[in-house]
Image 1 (cartoon, helix red, strand yellow):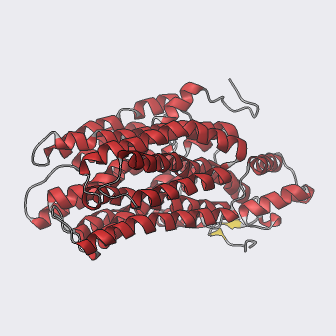
Image 2 (cartoon, rainbow, N blue to C red; image 1 turned 60 degrees about the vertical axis):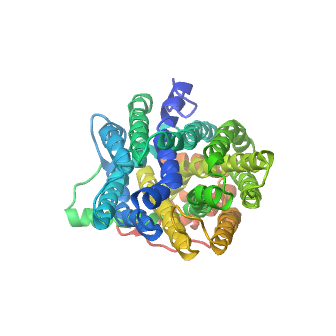
Length: 498
C-alpha cells in the first residue's frame, strides 16, 4: 500500500519494528549513564577521573567511526540494502560488547584501566554499526510529518521503556550476587535483550525508493578527505545547528543528571534503598506520557512541546535537589513525577526533528544524506555522554568524593549544588536555542513541495515569495544559492544568510 506521495505506507507493525531498535539505544545509554561510573569507582577501584577518561577516550575512536559508518551507509550497495545490512552484522557484537563492560576484572590497576578502555571502544564500535544506520530510517521510510512523529513516539516508548527496565532490574540483579558478579550477570542479560530485536528491525523496515546518487569509486585518500568535508557541510545547515543546540541542551542535562543521581540519593539523601524504585517510577512516567507528547507535537509542533517539557523537567530537578533524608515518600514521588513527565518530551522531540533536518539538507545539496546526519548524531550522542561523565568525574574529585565512605559536609554540599544547578542551566540553554527553530508542519510541507517542484524541472525564478522566505529561514541561505547552487566538490562554500 502507498501513501499520498507514492511511498510505501508505514503501518503499525512497521512502526513497532522500527521502534524496538531503540531498546538498545535508550537502554544501553541509560544503564551506562547511571551505573558505569559507580561500577568503575566502587567495584573495580578506579578513581572518578580515571573512570571519566575511559569514556572520554572512546570519543577519539568515535570521531572516525561514526561519520565513516554514516558515509558508507549512504553509498553502500548490497542485496540486503545499504543500511539494514548493518543490523544483521551487529547482532553478535552488540551482545558481546555490552556484556564485556561489566566484568569485575582482576589484576593490576593499569591492566584494569586498559581493559575497560578496550571494552568501551568495542562497545562503541558495535553501537555505531547499528545505531548510525538506524537513525536514518524515519527519513528513509516516509516524508509525512505526522507519520514521522508517530514513528518517533513509538521509538521513544521503546527507548524509555528500556530505560525503565534499566532503572528497575540492574541494581536488583547486582545486589543479588556477591563481589560484583551481579554486574556481569546484568550485562549478559541486557546484552541479549539489546541484540535480539535487531532481527525484527531488519524484517519490519525498509529503505527509501527515492533515487540515490550512484557512487563513483575514487582513490582512498580522496574518499577519506571527502568523507569529512561532507560532515563539515552539515554544520552549514541552519536547521541542523538549531537542532543540535536543542539536542545538547536536553541530552547533556540528562547525562549529568543520570551520572549524579545515584550519588545524590545514596550519599546526600542517605537513602540508597529508594534508588531503584524512584528511578523506575521516573522511567515509567516517561513512557506513560509519550502518547500525550506525541499528540501535542502533532497538533502544536515540536517547538512548543519541547519547551514545555524542558520547563517541567527542570522544575522537577530543582524540586528533587531540595529533598533530604527526612523527606516524605510523597514528596519524593511528586518530584519524580515532574522528572518523568517533563523528561518524556525533552528526549523525544530532538529525535523527532532529525529526519526533517535531512529534508532541509536536500534543499541545499540536492542529495539525500540521512547517513551524514545519522553518523554525526551518533558521534555527538556518545560524545555528549562521555563529556558529561568525564566532567562529573572531575567534579566529584573536585568536591572530595571518596568511594564507599562517609562523605564530608563540604562534599555533600558540593554534590547538592552540582545536582541542582548544572542540569537546569543546560535545560535553559536548550530552551533559548529554540528561538531559531523554524521547522513547523506548515513550513515542512512547503519545503517538500518546493523540493518536488525543483526535481520536476521547476526553475528558481518561478518560486513564490512565501516559499522563498520559508526555504531561506530553514536553510540559512539565499534562495539562489539553494538546490545545488551553494555546493561544490569541496563542500558548501557560498555565504549563508544570517
